[in-house]
Image (cartoon, rainbow, N blue to C red; front, top):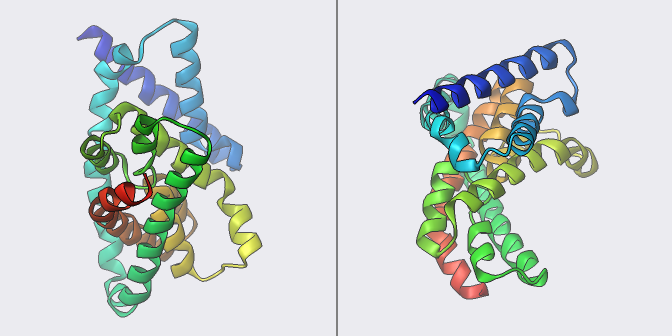
Length: 226
């Protein structure tokens, strides 16, 4: 119990410290989710703490992800009229994003020569962690490994999205929101929400739709390309 409490306090303290730094120096490389994750990994390596030990307390923070996603319903309510009007474009973009996310992960991992176990763990990388882990379990992947790939997808999207948006010339808030939500799940959505409330709301819808769509099509696409 004391170990679990220590891990929880350590995680919260590190995040609050990195958030304080980020609010004073808003740079991509000071983003709390990136810096705090790196610091926690370093601490675990330096003190030779197993992942299982950390998760005795980390799992309670992980379980807050569900309520945090539900809390995003408020901005959805604010922009409900726009969401109803633009549902077809949002749905179309999200479906395309889900298919591209799955197929690209499958083909690139096969091209790299990864084992089937790793490939199955990569498939649901672009959806939020609880859903991704369930999909991974059903398709034969490893849930903890899938959680790592989800983090990589989220942080990767956070790091490269300014470049991608600039190169593509995408300026419309709905397009940005769909891209972030369907590719970088909750981490991308938080970045969109910070930039613009409407974009964040669209990203929330895309994230939720993507989770449902990937849950449905992932097993079939995996069988098709494996």
